[in-house]
Image (cartoon, rainbow, N blue to C red; front, side, top):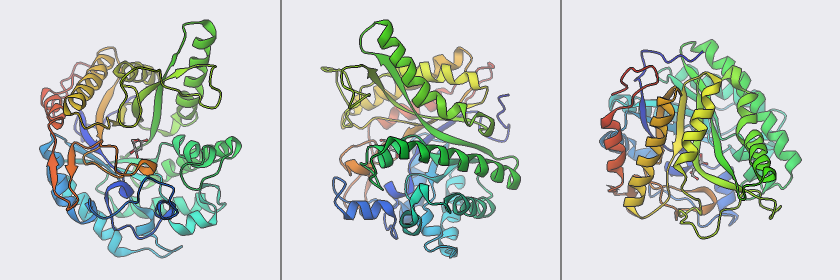
Length: 401
Ligand code: BGC
């Protein structure tokens, strides 16, 4: 049954980010080593420095019309060495969360957003036999300490991490094996399940879920075989993870950006784009209808739906505004059709470090100059306007918040 506590805003208009992508001053983690090894387009640095400028940033998010902020915790700060917990880092995050709430923003906190402490990575990362226990120890510590958090996400994109890091090898640890990738995915699911139960035992009222990356798969050619392939990709990439975690998710968190075309033509790349359509700086096609489809589909799980990420990398602010409006519009239609949509988090509040792509893609609602100065972009007005218009919830109650 879908339940949304009356203590939370009826609809969350958020911005999303993750620790490694904005904080700067990273103490050392697997991504920093990956960057040092030259595996990314340039290295992450301290110019954004959200770690010290978070007060300014949460004020900025508020100005953008948000009433929620999704962040992640940097495990390597909290536990720099096995079993050694850094109290200052815990205090720092507690301040950050207090500042977030003081701006009227509801925090949604991800425990693991791609990065790992070096001691975990060196022991074998997600395949390390001690991973489950280590993750649960971290979970217990953070949930006990950050009691101001009512929305937890255990793991960001449990399918993307094994795909990029263990199957395609373009993210750490750089392995290339589908079999190993699938082992990582099942390990993440097992960890999520235990972490979910642990969090609920400490904070029964907290809502706990995943942020699951979903793609709209479309048949490149309208033949039964292509339609069947698109349906198969949907079942494996989108549905499988939720099907295997639906009993341990209080909300269905979806990260949606784009569609992919199902074709038999290029077996090396099951997710090609069409030729000749405009693409974002990430090389992704813009397909708001996909968000409608996937939100309407996710309603079958009977849980509140949060769009935990959606956004565009562009320097064209009209394009950004159109992207936001068309995707929120698609969500409004899904809600009108019965989907219990409770939140939309734009990725991202600030331009940030886009993993292997470095700082080049510009997803932010605010630009960050080399000296750290933030400037809200014109496209950000779209989020503010959508939030001001409110969101009509499925049961007819107005979600103006
Ligand atoms: C990830 C973010 C990333 C964004 C844009 C998501 O896959 O969770 O960390 O920056 O997409 O690529």
